[in-house]
Image 1 (cartoon, helix red, strand yellow):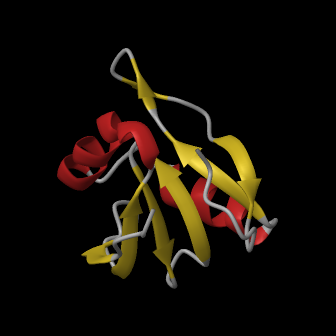
Image 2 (tube, one colour):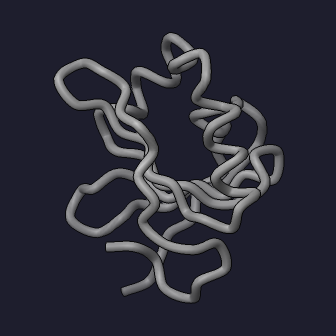
Image 3 (cartoon, one colour):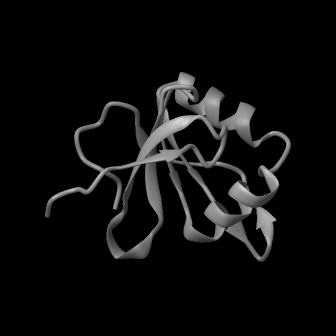
Length: 97
């Protein structure tokens, strides 16, 4: 399946980035130079991050996780921001499912 890449502002830092949809409606994978790499974000977290800027520590947490070489997943459950889940490594050839 061909990946369709969109030029979008990053959902976390709001700087220019690219994103593509994850299979099964699981959200998006963003590639953001300002954040330092890739991260995954759940559909419920996208609109919340774009509207209210996200949790105050979200940007720093995403950047720190990326800097360690991890691929973080940003999610909201029950209306609450969740701790970042590591779902892979930066630079891995395949996208997380």
